[in-house]
Image 1 (tube, rainbow, N blue to C red):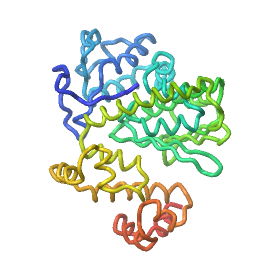
Image 2 (spheres, one colour):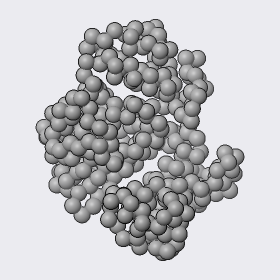
Image 3 (tube, helix red, strand yellow):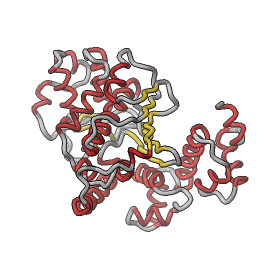
Image 4 (tube, rainbow, N blue to C red):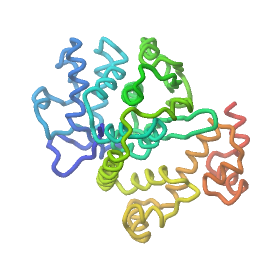
Length: 355
């Protein structure tokens, strides 16, 4: 189910290094073809769709080929101009669910319920996409599934959000044996020209111009059993998923891997030693590899603490003592000093500025 992969030494000469911070990110031509086929079926001329992308018609007949990230974004820009349906990401996400039974899909299907499935999406997100950081939290009255871009998406953000949410929503309905799920969807961008498509597709409540791209899930939906629940299959699929995730993470840059692991771990428990153990190396080796990239474990941890702190203060009314504990600080005073150093004001003042 992986939407994006990293460039390997055996990649075709078609793969070229992007002149940006995303220069390691490439996309298999096989992951791009569904978008091209969908629009071609709707009458879009292939020559116009591929214009300026440096993708040629003959490339669509190849199997072992990758394009770079900027080529992918250009293709989506063209699609927005040419597509009869501006919300083509919804259709493609649903099509992805219908036509692909990948490893992650099989593991999700064998889950006990929706709650377990959502945690799996968070933990095995690299099997779905490297473009986003997925987060899932359960609160007293509801759960929140949040999607944060890990790379620049420019004008393509709505497409990727539509696509990701539509694929997850479609497989969720299938696993619950339900035609509808009463969820609330929030999107960070303004309403598209055909916003009614969102309402027709997702049902429930749809909101635009929000702070984040996220889904609010009632607890009763989370606890509903999956019709395909199978503990034995889940165990088998888990082992395969873990091996695949390790394989993907071993191909990525060490800095990115450390960031991903910090986000997966609870910040009050994370340490250089625990991360090194999860990366199957010694703390000294990990420190040396980070130093070679002019970065330190402490600076990465502080950046992740900053992001988590700002997000929590903006979105949740959480006591400073509790937030400080979650972030791994000894007390609220230590956290407040760190926060003021990051943004120039104390946490309480920052929250007042957001209201």
